[in-house]
Image (cartoon, rainbow, N blue to C red; front, side):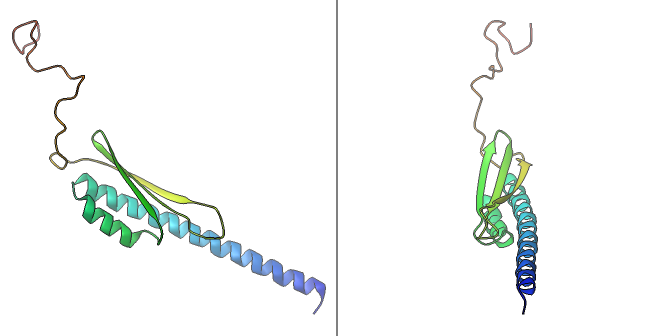
Length: 126
């Protein structure tokens, strides 16, 4: 075997490894988006525990899930490092609008005016 053949085989192994890593990264990204979408859908309905269970089955192994409620929307981010040799993290993000009655009512907002305005004496506009 010549030196050129050894270099060519090493290069082929490196290119094949990079291609496999790229495919694994794309597959992990798609699975993160699918898991985030499912979790956001169920969390918006008020069933976060069931959503986490479903997303855990869909997401790649070792993924992290972040669920937060911002006003009347649920934002979910699912992240994972698909190939352990590379310091590359992929994530999927999904949002969902909370369905009425799915989450407890936080009550009146501090900046919201009361229904009965004390200056006019009635709830009707002046």
